Length: 79
Image (tube, rainbow, N blue to C red):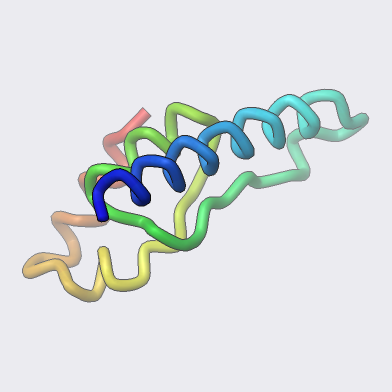
């Protein structure tokens, strides 16, 4: 259901924020790339990116897109 999905997104964004802070405290934070995998949807990607994800494993979001190049361009345009 939508409520369960929102709870999962909230939990994921909290974990990403925590992981981003942990990475920042490392001696070489530039050597870590924070990725999100699982539950990647068009409406969740911007939330995950804002929480610190530097990349996402797109899976069906990419392969289900009618125009893969446009989907990739959309993803690269997020900040």
